[in-house]
Length: 266
Image (cartoon, rainbow, N blue to C red; front, side, top):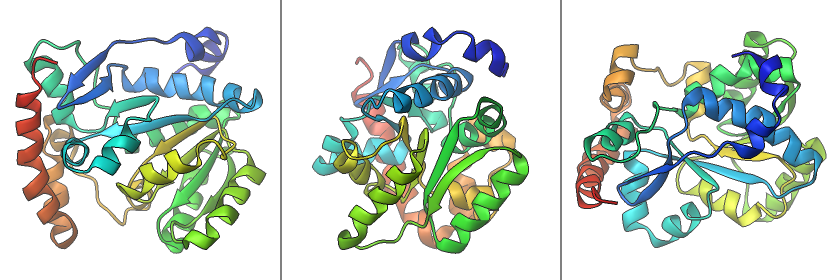
C-alpha cells in the first residue's frame, strides 16, 4: 500500500462510497480490505483533528448475523454503525450467490489490523488498544511495536472494568486522543460500549475487534490460509478452542445460513 499516494488524495477518506450488499439482514460494505484500510488511515486522523464525532466500524460474521436477528439490544446497537465490514468469508460468498453487489473480499478484523500497522506507522496514525486480559493487551502492544517500529501507540488498557470505572476509561482514552480506537471486549459488550460512549470518545474511528489481541499474541492460533480463504476458519477455531466456541458455532452457523437464505433478495 503506497501511503504517500494515499495521503496525497484526502478525498479518498471523505469520498469513498461503495454500495452495500444486504446479507442476512445487514447492510455490509463492499469495500476491499485495502480500500477499507486506506479509508481508515486517511479519515480517522482527519476526523479527530476536526473534533468530529467518532465513526463506528463494526463487523459482520455468522455470529453477528445470528445475534442481530435474535437480540434486540444488539440489533439496535449494530444499527448505529457507520460501516459494517465482512469479517466472515460466508458474508463475501453470499454476496455472490444471490446477485447482490459483490463484496470485494473478506476484511477480517485481524487482517485489517495487521495490514494497517506499517502504513499507520508511516502515516503517523495513532492507535489505542482497549480490551483483553492485561498480559495479553501488554503483549499485543509489544508485538505490534516490533512489527511496525515507529507506530504511534497512544495508549492501551485491558478490557476489564466495572460500570463505576467507565468514566475513567473514557477519560484515559480522551487524554490519549487516538486516531483509531480498537475495542476488543467481544460481542455484544464492545458494540454496546461504543454506541453508549461515541459522543464522549475523542477518536477518529472506533473499530470493534473481538479477540484480535489474542490472535496477535498467538494465544489464539489462526487457521491455515486455505481455511481462511475457503470459509472454514470457524472450524479451525472450534477445533482449537472447543470449550469456548463449539456451542457458539453449532448454534449460530446454521441460523446465519438460514438468515442469508431468508434475506437473499435484499
